[in-house]
Amino acid sequence: MSTVNNHSIHEACVEACTKCAQTCEQCAQDCLGKHPECAKICLDCAQFCALAAAFMSRNSQFHAAVCGLCADICTACASECEKHGHGCCKTCAEACRSCAAECRKMAEAS
Image 1 (cartoon, rainbow, N blue to C red):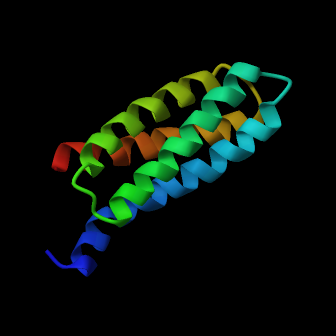
Image 2 (image 1 turned 30 degrees about the vertical axis):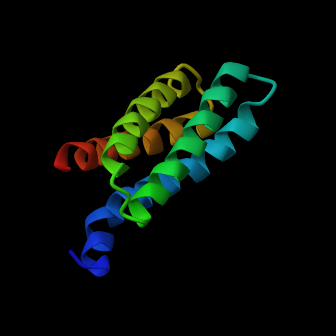
């Protein structure tokens, strides 16, 4: 498979992971001090989403396994964010749910 084809296969998931990582970073900053557990899991999620995007971007043989774990972390982050009524948490939970769905597809397709 060519690099172009690999890129198009992973494109939607890479974009979802990148958006989720950015949204989680912002949510973590907003929740810092108010909801430390939320901030902590958002930072974990942001870091793992960035890792998953990197693995897919280089078509690593381990990208499916990383995406599977990323989906689990995104789901946990969404559940934590949904406990809070803040706008940033709602936005973050939505990005996490979307990323989890894309990562599950990627993990199951490989």
